[in-house]
Length: 227
Image 1 (tube, rainbow, N blue to C red):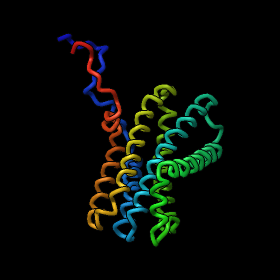
Image 2 (cartoon, one colour):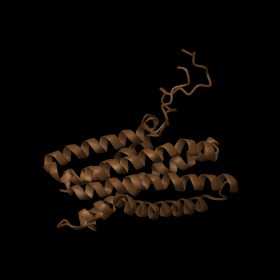
Image 3 (spheres, one colour):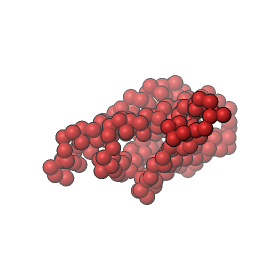
């Protein structure tokens, strides 16, 4: 058996752990609890939980892309001349992320949307709209900190792509999980639905707090030749 060298891929090792500020950690947890709170305390439906879960995934993917473009642009153009311009640029960035999120939600969740629209409550409800708004509001501070952190880090565009692209793939896989769950969730009953929602929420919180471990699901596990 050939001895491993420093150039071999450490197929078993997790990627570097991403460090979050307390604000980022809190916003990650809260935004994922919003669909669950609606289900437990506001008599939300399974369809609403699924749609909000898809939106959460879409919003994360959209923000990864828009933040990456914004950081690259700022690195090329230099720092903003004043705080007002910085705030306007951030609000514009967040608006673009919301629009892209709605498009991705339609792409990933159109089948679920049809299912929800056929229920007595319908698809477009005030509770759903307020939940979407709450997700965006609670996510915004953590995203802004990530934006500022990426600017200070000095990471190149290629380095940020290497960090973010596996995360996008993990989120796409999670969207597939929600899609598959939508085909069976009506058979769970109310108690089964609540248990499934807690498990899915816990998985998504763990995914976002420990992306280094979740990314291992999409990283090649090829053993070095001769090992």
